[in-house]
Image 1 (cartoon, rainbow, N blue to C red):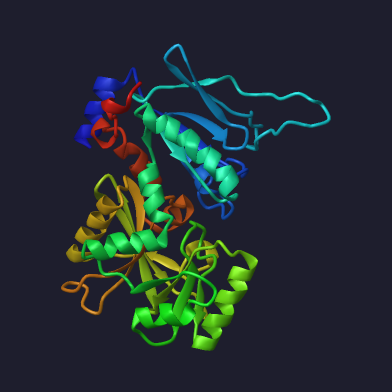
Image 2: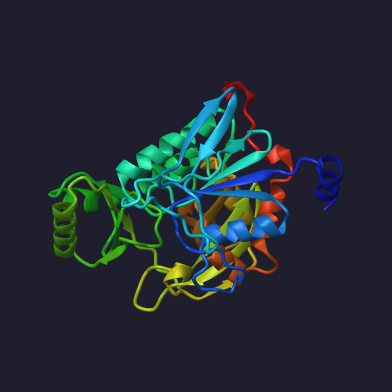
Length: 358
């Protein structure tokens, strides 16, 4: 609290700004209890309540230029309901908001939903974010963090190389690779089959009960998309998992998420029940260490608790670099979104890498 008061006193004439880049077209609403409220809308709403200047841009149509040493962001306008106004082909006119000037010293960049519309679109968006990184901006999440967290196999490699407990994982290289990959796991059925990439809520997670089912599922998936990276993992039975929110090296809170009946997923957005829970010291330290490993300033670390939570490390299932704030607001005490935004009032939590400035 003293740091916060000191910041307000010393920097009150120069509060930080937020640029939210997303492709979500949900309206910005005022109540955190609205089930349709998106993470983007919550970020915008709570930022404004803190008195922060917010610029919202849609990835579609957005671009950036550097003019006379100033980084400018161009975006289609939004209406009063928070919906982006796309060009009307019949009118033949393209309208843009006034270019927004961004400065790495006082502007945080929050990309939301990067990559969910397919590689072609996301590659262009990714490159635009890279431009900001080259200029020394703090990106939440950074592209390094994003790359690690959106590749479940890359995450697995990092975890195993750093003594993080995690389910055994094997990559399926082609449509006839099921048997080899399963033997590499050195486990028994059932197992988990999932895409190695992506950030969406439990999409593409399947329980496989036999080699015959595994072979059939792999062939069907690769027939539909022969370039989709697939992994299989050992199945760890549990009644719940834990989402630990880590921001700038500190635990914001933890949610106990019960597994959906008849399913293996525990995503709140899919209907799983969630409640706040206390972590053991071991779970806290391991969550913070994992966040540091993936270079995450703000991440959700997903754990399966061990049988002896005080002495044995939890399994880390994955790390989410693009948090959905709705579940946090409705489960954790206080306002975790506000706490997260306040933590960035301390410039020590920013990247501000002078060596990258041009």
